[in-house]
Amino acid sequence: MTEVWLVRHGETSWNVEGRVQGWEDIPLNDNGIGQARALGDHLARLAQAGSPIDAIYTSDLERAHHTARIVGEATGLAPVVEPGMRERNFGVLQGLIYSMMDAHQPEAARVWRSRDPDGDLPQGETLRAFHTRVIKALNELAALHPHQRVIVVSHGGAMDVIWRHASQVDLQAPRVAPLLNASINRLQIGPDRWKIIQWGDVGHLEQSSANDVTP
Picture 1: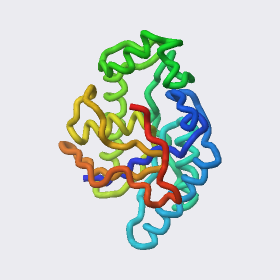
Picture 2: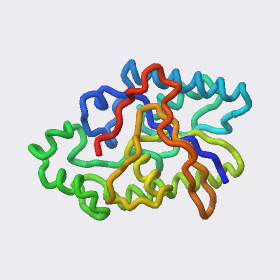
Picture 3: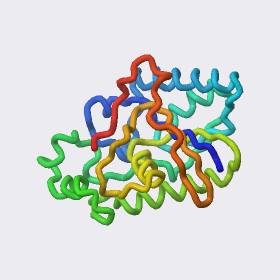
């Protein structure tokens, strides 16, 4: 088994505004940078106390990569880019405020809300293809680090499908787990079994009101 500490990137201005980010390369805002620093300091203290991190992987999008770089500076590890952990491509919905999707892209908004695994998002990625990509990437990362602990910095959508896979929850079922900025979400991953150890830990942040992902 590999212990994976899945981390959502720090906050961005689009998180605050409630905009769909997807593959748009939005940077961290000042609060997000502070969240990443608090996370890095926390992980450095854990390492000093005997719980070191063996590797850091990150999505190639800047908001995740910047979070990983800050954590790497605190822990002495260089982040490795894994494009498979990138957020879902939401196509024509990207850049829209969630509450305005119906006004601008009604059909794509309907597909998004339906969570139809094979529903077509114009210029985007189906939920099933996204799920397959993320789970494959995380399984491959885990296989590289048997009996080790790794950080994987990713995105809310990726965390959603990972939580569902580990919990055996259908892609179309309601989500009950939070997907919080700069949170630590601990899993054990082996060749035939995924297990959640702890989810949604933001105790290392000064304020635990990190943005959740819109359902």
